[in-house]
Image 1 (cartoon, rainbow, N blue to C red):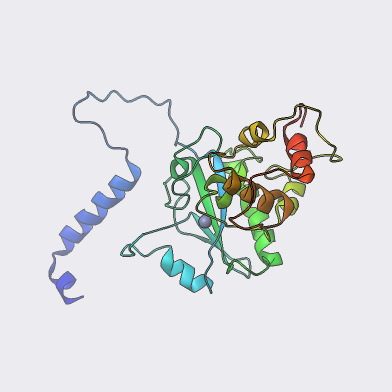
Image 2: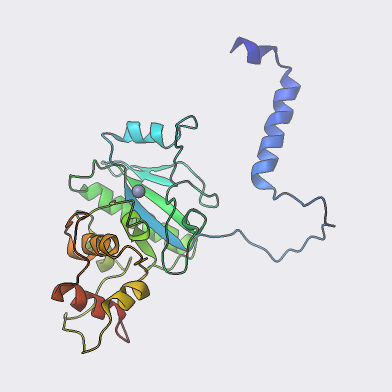
Length: 252
Ligand SMILES: [Zn+2]
């Protein structure tokens, strides 16, 4: 504190102005002649990724998500407390460090492509009703304001099945789907026709199937509310195939 008081106030003001300018003005490339076009807008996320914090309290997670000195610094755009309070840690237009390495469909740079929502949950407890309500409110806001398609809501486990198991089998995907968010099989589940390729369907849904056991585990956590663990044999059960067919059949 004492050291800061010795720095001339003007310098502090200039630094503050500089920082503000950096945050709001895109850099102009010095090797090019800048001819300003008005026909621009912000780069926008295309996907929303849901996580659980796997921590004991919202205060602990606020600390973790804003710790620049951590061995592996992480962040998220939003954090939902158990009481439904919505915290924002990163502006929507910036890239939070939340998804990490992964793949969803053709997307491979997920931190750039997504908005990350952490939910205060230790990984083995139900999500609270206020959290679900807050999440639905936030999804409504984000999909409307940022024009993210309502179906583009996935879990961290879905994009990084070999590394992540959040938000896990207790996450209420069906409730989200009933409100119009994410993907969910519609109509009565029926057996797929002969020749139906379940792994191709997994890819169409978005999963990276290079590790088939991991992808199938993530799929079952999402669509069947079950976690069969990492030693799962990568073989479909009839229920898996019915869901995959419902998700990918023409008109779904
Ligand atoms: Zn996560």
